[in-house]
Length: 434
Ligand code: S3P
Image 1 (spheres, protein in one colour):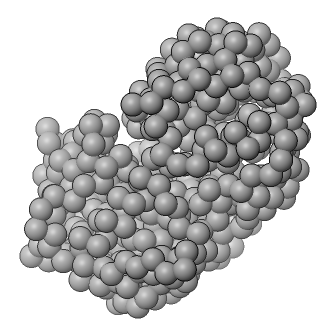
Image 2: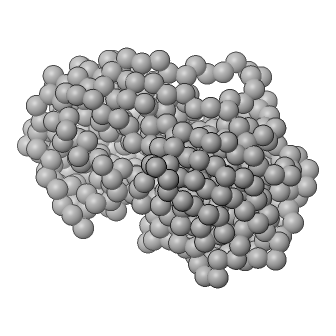
């Protein structure tokens, strides 16, 4: 475990390219494995989480080759997953753990055991086991709820499923299972969440319909996944953006950021806080518009300046779920109160991100209180500095680093190596800007 000190910084300057999107990389590899042909993926994320996905699809029979900076996946088809002959290790990757069973549940006569690291063993899978069981799948989880768990493949029937939480992982799992289910599968979202799976399936020739909060698809004979370029990850870019907003005198250009509207909540929130961020975000599509088949990107010009507090309510939470810890950090420097509500999902991420953020930032001098479903920050005082524990969570590690640059005395992050789960080049990128 590596402990790293981040000193207070002078203004950040320069250009940084956002690392490839983690959510989209996972999906691209999975859909490639499920398709019948060969898919070239440009700008695939090479990080611990997405390497777990390549390893998993290889174990299931897909061919994965690296060629000239691209990843080429030759799939086994919707019903062709091979028995891996031992547990599939998803490492720390919650998205892999929750999307993969959607495919495996329909593999008749084959069983698959899924396990992961210590953090994964504490993350609930009942949220996918429940709808999959309704489709006829057999899932045996530890204590009925946790990994390791076994998926036994069986014919599936379509369901209409109202998501109890706005989770893109659960939505994606049910839609992927729906590709092999008898009938039309419909998922109803309580609020929009990231729609990368829908876009990619539509791009692979599946008729995906969105009517209001309902997303439907029917059994597909095969997937015709298209070659794909992964956009930059806004969730990773958000750390450089936050640093540039907080360190006085900063001016940073962040290149090639994915600005799909279902992901761009963080940018909307910080603009509301008064942040200067140039760049054109995707507009929310009109009701009834067909599901898009591509992902928009743009360059973002970020400049430091004063911020004011804001309130983030439940409907906005899924659009910024992984960036909410950064909203807390920005809140420490903003005038007035910053409040996040309806974000109880943060408690079941790679760590309990409400407890971790509140205890961590308070240890650095913040005035912040936890609530059941979020936090309240009283801003204006900035941060003194000190030590923060990443708790094995990549986003907590990077939060601590940014806090250090913006603090008065600097911050030591315990367990900085966790950043490699999603952003192995993080420290180098930050250093280049400082
Ligand atoms: C993800 C969805 C979100 C997010 C996670 C990635 C995805 O989780 O927090 O980092 O790729 O679908 P939930 O869908 O559980 O909210």
